[in-house]
Length: 225
Image (cartoon, rainbow, N blue to C red; front, side, top):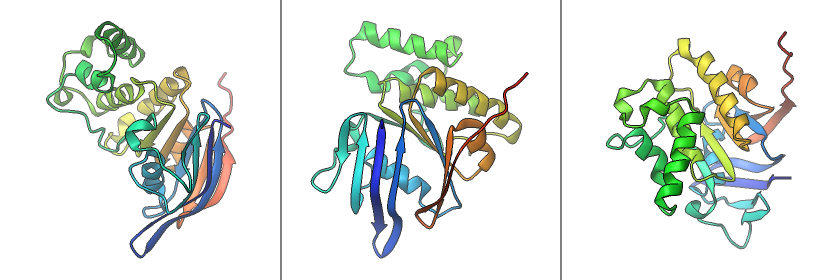
């Protein structure tokens, strides 16, 4: 298995949030986690990324144990990308500069080549010098995704990525995101409260309730003719 989460638990002071979660993922799989507010969805992502420390459990990603009873790898060493609800783009940086942000240790020539390739992948080659305020919500989301993909992470986490997109655009953006993730063969976890988001994007859906997995199913799509 490419990702193995075993008996993962997390609590805030006096408030248990996650209760011995266990699941696995294959390389390139897109997993959707749905549930109501307070079910533990975003906390799970923060724990997997290293932004929160679990009370117990084991996290194994791409052949490496990043967290267990004896140690936890810091967030900046886990090679896990994170796309936040509000995209968190730097307003004073251009599109190209935002995408290049995680490539500061990459030689300049290779960095430029990577940025160019990602701009092409997200169909925004002509937007390199624009700033976030000059972009639509959907374009900002694509830039946030490209920035997360730039360092070639082992895994990508997306927290409610459609929360700031108009309903009229949501269907198109969902399809674009699904295509980009599959093109990159990126192992991904999508957190959402919207079941339609999950079924349009994911290969498999897990339902969280009270910090526990209460349902799991594989998504079956009808082939288009």
